[in-house]
Image 1 (cartoon, helix red, strand yellow):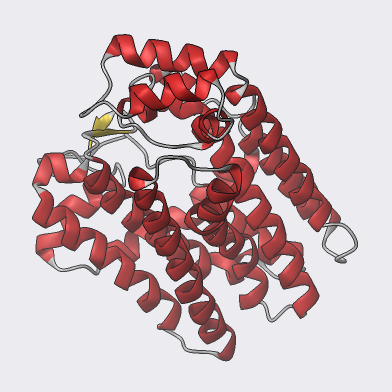
Image 2 (image 1 turned 60 degrees about the horizontal axis):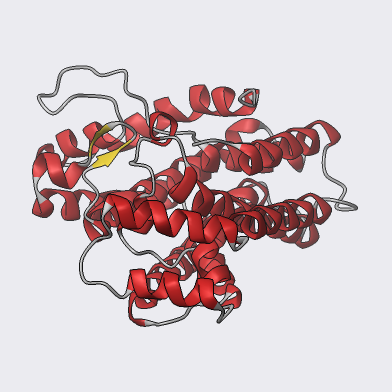
Length: 336
């Protein structure tokens, strides 16, 4: 699928501001932070690795334009949310023990856990500094909402980690966890530009609902890619989620059924340590045959439909709504 133009447009607008913000960090944290964003190699030499899709800053920019505000109004929110997102990625890689992200060595694997932890902390703090550099009422409101979204994201991450100790995880468990872990920050991203523009509450609420539903669609697709994704596209090994015995949505659909497939899959998960390649192949077959993949893909489409419906009747700019539709469809059909 063709990459939406807004992703490239937003990157060109946001990255210079993001670089300026990161460059204010102390000297000890500059190298690991710049490395994480794909701007430099581990020795500090320039890199063209890039820093991901840029979905969240694109949503922030679009949300300002959607309420008729100049694009520049959304930039502080775009930078802040990208900083929060990347702080979470650095810490997630430590938690999961992942040594590769976007086809590159992760920060903790390249610089050590200590440097990675404090670099993530620095990006988290910097996000709030960016918003409060000019503490207008709109920026203060955006800062409060960012604190709430970040707290929800952390609660979702904690719930995800707690799944390791639960014998069975249901679809509802997954949706509640993913609403926090992914949905909250995407809801913030999709509405922060409107908040910074001082838009009416009903427009902010519509954009927030769009982003939250989009987050659930995004995570459902992510769960499919975590098992069936192409490593050359995702930058992670095939079946990576199964290797780590994650109870993602396709797994939850099968395990919660309580049938023979559920029992066999649970027996594989109950083994100590990571699953072997043979175990991963068998688990993948069980999940697909039992309908876990199909039902997760259907779940993604359900939340995509809800996201698009949330924008109706909110009085948003037509051109921006069209771009939000294109971005949502891209998220729901992506391969990485």
